[in-house]
Image (cartoon, rainbow, N blue to C red; front, side):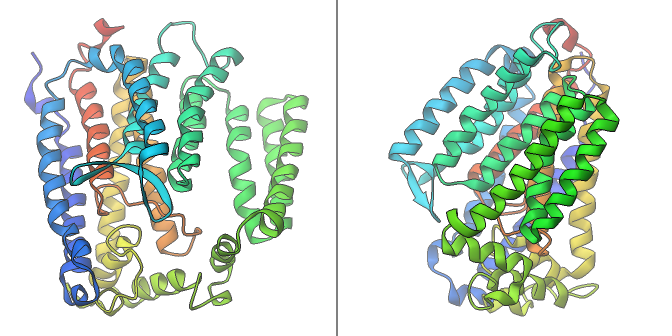
Length: 416
């Protein structure tokens, strides 16, 4: 019988801190003086978030009563069900902000791609750890694992939700690396993302990055064919980015990317978000302007300030101190999850926990990076802080699964 004192209460504490900060920020972004500029359905977001948080508290507790065996045994069935929901959403879903990602159930909307994150992590982890001799170094197993992840990724792309699709793609190097993929091959997998990012700024940055990464891959792996492939892939990535910027992307997409490198390019259009976000965070100073006192927030200069740009609300009204508390709490959560993964003897629990940590980290990195103009505005919420029922409940379920497997880790060896 496990001792309740062995439960990871510190992780729960971090969760509570984050959603408490989120509730306060959502209140400011929807119920303060800014409410006069907002439609009633936006003002209701605060009360909806309270409901989502209340439901999640009970869900987190309920998950702890489940045997870890169920996460393994039901993973493929859950994956198949979520895929069906994704296809149904593609044809019969509700479109919000250009993305057809929601299924309506009466007064509620379910973002099916959020549930798909859990299903994909569980199914891929089950496959990669189902036999002792499975390793990502085996090309066959690596390819099948990538296919398991790519199928929902393609469906998310078809729903026109680029941000969420990126989350699925980041699972590929994380899960394969943790399953035994060599360092050099892992670097090769993530190198196109690094090169593409730098190519957006200047094309020759991408070329330089391709050469440096190729040299690093050769030094680590000592495989000539892999190094040549890496260089060719890097140069093709740089060329592809330039082709997309000049020929393939729509004008508003090009404008958004141009605004990232130079917000003054279109200060009243695509650059508006970046300028207002930087202004809000910068004006907060050390301790902020005070609760409900942020001018950028309360005068509705910030776009989507209850979701994508909620970090700016925190930075403006609570300053560097408030923003630092959010960042430190997230870093603490990431470290605790990685420590939990390292303490597991069961590979399934390790892989699931690391994958969940990576999903949270990518969301955090992109959201804060977009809010501070370090990354293009992609449109990903800040876990546990931003408004959103599907995202909050799904993220809490992922955290609850990690807590469950950690609590039962002494008994987990019998679930192989």
